Length: 474
Image (cartoon, rainbow, N blue to C red):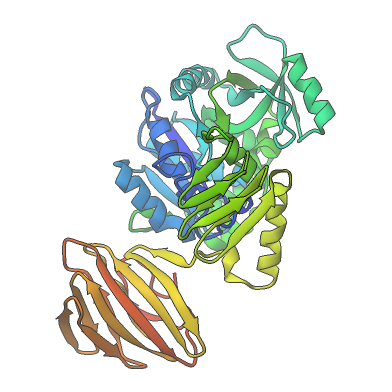
């Protein structure tokens, strides 16, 4: 019996959901619509398909430890976590997964899904997936067509061909249409939203990729064959993969193949591609507001108000998005939320870190929160998980003071190793080799005060690292 392998694409940046979603911590790694992150919801949903094995995950190298930890917390072991050194869109990403799937089973069936979608009716999805798997065994390349209940202009569409179902030939893929055209599509009943989810055998996908985009397959194959294992990860060769052209699976294969079919799916689907779509995906109060965190409103209607670290108050607002994080606040009318991407572009152009990083930055050993900074100093709060170990490192331009707030720290400073407990501190001079470990059973919390002429994260020289990060500053 062939292996049924879920493939989770987790490479997106989610810039339209800034300031919550950022390049180094995108929306799929956030808990936006449930208590679990979107990645965890996706993994759990795919695991429920009858016969599904452990998933293959394709993700950005910078997200590798967070992806692995979120799967571990869920109790899901991945068949492979493939690290893209650069983004090259979905056709190469799915090709990487197909090559990995063939190493598991020569007749593997892949259920490909982005990590950042919402599906409310999971049972309906599982029924549709079973139909799609049956079509894949017959050599078809299946896409899920979302039953359109409204003339959305933010989605691409699929026109179905003649047939009796449950799968229909794909007659045409259509780019995002204007409102009047989208209205006609929905009224006809022959058009579905393009979900970006697919089912096919790994071998059949690669066969069609070879036929229609041989250059992509050649580059991806070279990159995969030169890949290296690193802990739980597969590092795709950066040079060979960078040589691959960027292309979506729709353009490269699905719009060209003669064997594309669509299975209708009516399951409360959303790609959560903007603040307005996230608003629509969440339950509202009697005034039509979605209020998250410490939010207080008066005479305010149909608004999304999200606070992460302080009180956010709104008076007399209608149809607005208000999002607060520790280092940024967004206020926008709902009809302008697509422009958030332009705002992020301006932040990048200005070289501002808010486009990529939150104030709190996650590392495989825990996290740090930059709580204050000024000329020649910076203050961080470090949280080290039980068993967490920072790299053995040194700095050329800064000294550090460490104060233990709670827990126990094992400190290495040059040739000395010692323990620090609550309310105890130590000093790390410039050039000293040092390391922090948490030998305890509870999280370790420290305050780190940095002082010096340069305080950037790239002033780190790593000598040893439990997480394979030697030579990096992430």
